[in-house]
Length: 119
Image 1: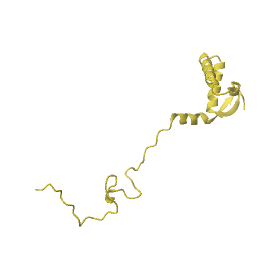
Image 2: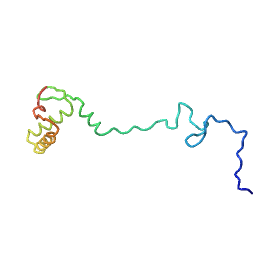
Image 3: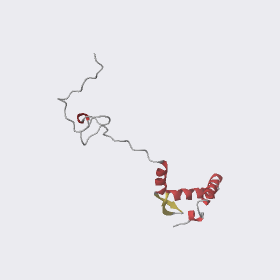
Image 4: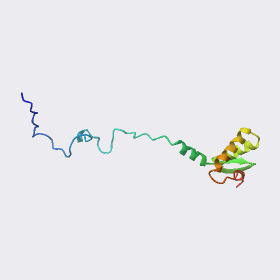
C-alpha cells in the first residue's frame, strides 16, 4: 500500500455557487428566506433600574393639598411628603431632610421654600 492520499474525484460533483466551509453551510441545509430557527427572537433586556425610577419620579399625579387639587410630579410629591412629616415632628424625617439638604448643597443652590410653594 502506498501512503498517497486518494485523488479527489472530478466529475459528477454538483456545481456550487459559493465555497462551502466554516460558517457557510450548503444551501440545502440553510433556512429559506423569511424564516429562521428562532421564531421568538432574542429576549428583551430588563429595563435599567435608574431608567425605571426616572420614569416613575417624573410622572404627574394629582393630590389634594390644603383642600385644593394640585398636579405635581411624583418626585415633588415625595419631597413635599418628607418635608411635611419632618415639620410634624418626626425626628427620623427631620434628619432625612437635613441629610438631603447637605447632599444637595454641593450640586448647586437649594431653596427649601421652593418645595412648599404653591404653583
